[in-house]
Length: 73
Image 1 (tube, helix red, strand yellow):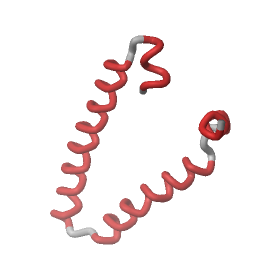
Image 2 (image 1 turned 30 degrees about the vertical axis):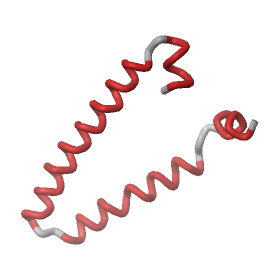
Image 3 (image 1 turned 180 degrees about the vertical axis):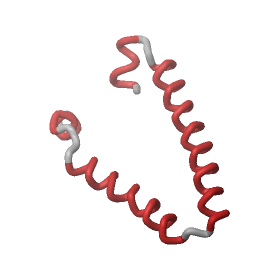
Image 4 (image 1 turned 180 degrees about the horizontal axis):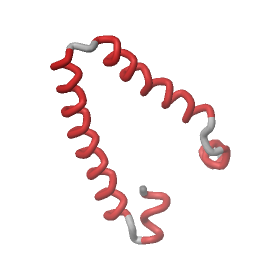
């Protein structure tokens, strides 16, 4: 946010989007978690929970090489 937002004067807008995404994710987690708890479908719950670390791992593998060079210098 700071590197890209400050020169463009968009830091506040970026923070608004960030907080909106956090609140939306919290609501979705509550709704989906409530449904899974009510149905007691443990297989689906663990399968869904295991997807997030896999997505994070794949994103780390295919990260932008320009960002890695910028951090290294």
